Image (cartoon, rainbow, N blue to C red; front, side, top):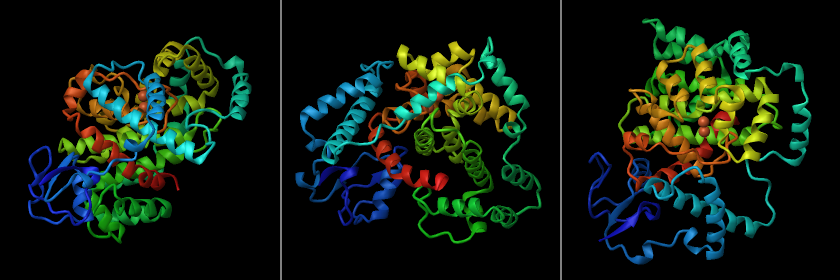
Length: 427
Ligand SMILES: [Fe+2]
Ligand SMILES: [Fe+2]
């Protein structure tokens, strides 16, 4: 018998002690020979180690990072330390996130050295884009407002395109409200939007759900996933389409959505460990948490350029610069947008409070999105414009009730689900 890290499990290994999740639920019984599916289930539920019959040290093979040159590890540590400058590294949660982040950075540097010169890191505008940024700063100087947030609030109220709920979402909503409508009716409605239908089918068959059998029909997908979840996912797909045309000179949109989807995936993984029902709501809250920034990038790019520049020069947190410059930060703007879309209050709260999750009594969901956002940023997956890992609110971490040991498994699971989930929304 021997404990093996979950990342080192292989099919055919013999389990010698029951593998249970953190709530004591049996995942794989002692005496089972592991299959790929068992390993996937163990990982999904955040198990860190498993007891394996006849395991030897050679089974616990060194990971890629254990083979990286120590000089590279040191360089990675220096780079990552800058990203964590607004967090207390003595805090054990931050220390663990720092360790994971440093390991990932070390592997990234080692791979880049092996491959030669690489493209610019995600999130940094190209030199050409920077030149265009300077030009953008000169657009419409007469539009500068004393309190730019009033301008943005006016835009959210007045812009019909912005305030109109995506059409398919509205129609799905109407149908769900009718007591007589069935999964079949909702599937028929979705099937009229071929792109949405194809994405939903891909989604329910992806590792995001990890259903054992293939789901071939939309009505089966709707009945398995549930109408509320389908509505949320359809909404996410529509929102992405709504903000598709933001010019790349203001923000690297690929990087923006990678950060947002990573936050959604992590929020959903955390929600699953808390046995929260309808985890898609948490996925959507994570995916939309920084949407207020898209409003600024899309509708008032001249403000966005100034804010990003100021944040880089002053090395301040982006949301602090936003609050100073606009009179409100992206959480407030995102909250207003979701309010104008008349989305559920819980979703609006998660977006509005993701940097201040303890400002509400019923703060579990904002706390989950907060921890997911900090984790996504610490893992270095994309960026919505920030340079730094946002400060972790200790009380929110306690409320979420995650074990520090599960962060490694969450990082691994996020990597596993991210690319596939990203492709579903963007290809
Ligand atoms: Fe944020
Ligand atoms: Fe974020």
